[in-house]
Amino acid sequence: MSSVAVNSGGRRRAIGGILLVLIIVAGLVSARAAAITIREDRVALEPGEILAVHAQTSWGVPFRDALSWSTQPSGLGTMDESGGFHAGEISGSGTLTARFGSASAQIPVTVTCPKTALIQGVRFDVSCGRIADVYVDVTAAGGAEHARDEVEREADRVSRELQIVADRRFRVYYVGSTPAFSTTVQWLGRGFSTGPQVNESDAAYLDLEDIIAIDQSQTSITQTAQALRHELTHRFLRQLVGYTNVAKIPTWLNEGLAFLEEAEPGWLRTEARLVSASSAHLGRLPSLATLNDLGTWNDRAGLDHLYQYYAAGQAVQLLIDDITLPGVVRVLKMIGTGASFPRALAQAVPDFDFNAFGNRFSDRVAALVSTYPGITVAPGSADGTGVTVIAYGLTPNAPATISTKGPLERLAAGRVDPYGIYVKYLGAEWPAGEYRVTLETEGRRFEVTATR
Image (tube, rainbow, N blue to C red; front, side, top):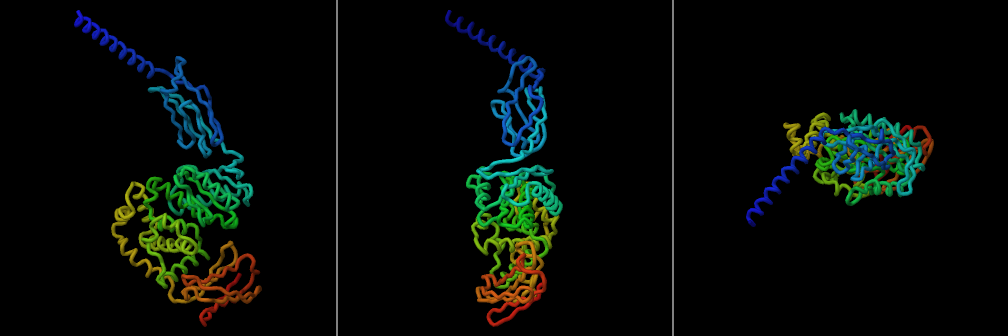
């Protein structure tokens, strides 16, 4: 009896299991045939706002747990488990789709451009353009419309020159003071595990967040375009190779390309070339190997910090001379597939000997100048006006005096820097006219005529 009861019970459980499967299958068939409706006609929010979105099947039962949601483009926002749509950080338009089985419903989504924003006590006016949302500290000069136009103009230029087309919107912040810049960058970069490094920087690109920030107090309004072009280059390179691969680009290549985009022909390119040449002439030019690592790069301070950009710029220019800019872009695209820099270089430009390139780097840079020491003049200066006088190949740390004769006459004493360089800027405070500039050091006299 007991065995029969057991067998009978087993059959009942088996029959019950079959019925359950049939019910589930029937339910799945019904689900596939079901229609989905979304109560809301559209979603329109400012960045960071949240709105509850309600979807249900054709027979009126909400399937919150079983629904899947997608946003296109994905940066517009995300859905939480409770059905709340969280607007993303940049403006734009797209769609929100709810799915259950083969059924789906879709509504338009717009993340609208805010007029103002408050970040850690810093107030911003906001202007959203074709490719970026631009936030301008109310204490910064120029205003949001001017900044938006600058971002669009310079982004178009960098995109064209690097042959990389912007694939999505990003954000740019202009900040009016150094403390506010540091505070803003640390907050915007809160997704970084250690926080972004902005020591001795007047601008930063936060690649994890796809954000550019500029400290306008450290540069004149006429010069913010230079800082912007530098950071836009980092942004476009990150787009080209992808966030997971950007660290595979040697720092000298990443920073060198950014420097070349930043420095138009004039004082900065001339200063960089002469500083690097003088450094090489004196045996002080850093090797490419010492310019590879971003951590080491960020740890340098003072002139070492500044002049590494100059050296990287020369390295990239020589690389472009050797393999062309399209060749460099091919290398970067290979890095975007996950290849290391040496492997990408070997595959994209098989005939190029990178070891020889590195070994000859210092000699080639030293040869950028035919004779040492010397003095020259370049148009422009650090404040965007006037001219720059540069003496190079001098004895490091030697005392020197520099005098100017012309509309404004001055005499100043100083020292040659450790790389054999002495620089004099004749910027906005110098009246227009012709100047005779004389540098004297160690009994030698160098003269040049500069027209302001």
